[in-house]
Length: 404
Image 1 (cartoon, helix red, strand yellow):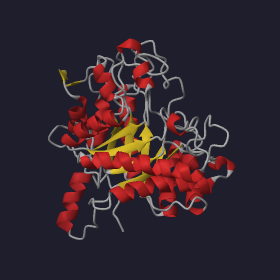
Image 2: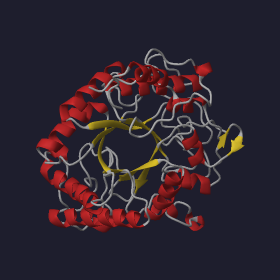
Image 3: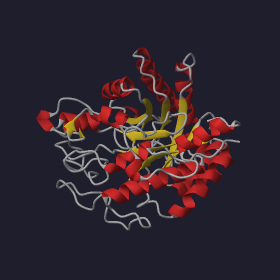
Image 4: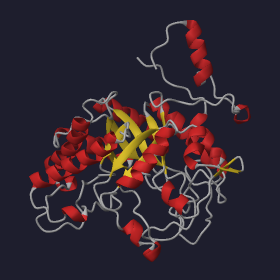
């Protein structure tokens, strides 16, 4: 948004973005919802599980009517879909035994998701894990295909070629993502868990910033090379978990890792887990980090429970912790938290928030740990698959700071 200099335009902007006050809940109808563009603010949703859930009995409803979940998210304000990509996730088929028919979160599955998301008018953030399975702060397992690599230059080339092949394929399908994430929650680095003796060392927690930086730069370069004739240019995202790590990690990856060609500082913020930064202190920290590095900044993963109960036998990951402030683990509490967080992050200067797996409802879907969902009490759907009031946080009329 550009600065507004004329009183008439300023008055209109105030009406649209609630410069004076937010509308009351009972005033929010289909006629006065605000649908933001990704240039205004990314109202994101990670929908990586949706295809698998749909294939295993999951049903989504809006206003009591069974509907396509991608359309539900679009109609409720989502403008950015985040999708994870694993290198060779054979286990996603194997967990179903003889009933397994396909891989999930591989390139073909991601292609399908991108096509549907774009057909619905939503932008896409592609999250490359550089692993066959989950990459997170606790584990960063190299793809099996790369486990016998012993030279940094070979690993860099493997990352470059793999990333280039993914991007070239999606480009050929006219499905190039608007944002590309190089690595997932890489707090201590990439491909550092369970490695063979002699595998290149990329653990920045052990000081190996330069080698990690070279591998990250290889992935970035591949994206830049394939997208050289694409306009607007895709935005490169780097991602760590927990806001407490922001200044430390990005300061070092830039100064010691020599990684500078990226656009967005991304971080996971799960308020029930990431408690060292007090919720009330988060906006000031975010503003400080944005100013320190002169980059865009975005919450790439967040969630909040609407219940402490479950709908299946798969143990839930959230709900047993202490609530945040006055935000109860109820439908109203979830909506209030997400609305409050969004307003705080807008004022702090973030460019968006992505809700992690808001569609991971219970079904016959399987992963490595169970059948169903360990997240159904954190979704934006109730246990019957109906949309929750929490969806309204994406279409509220928020107050935006004036740009200088």
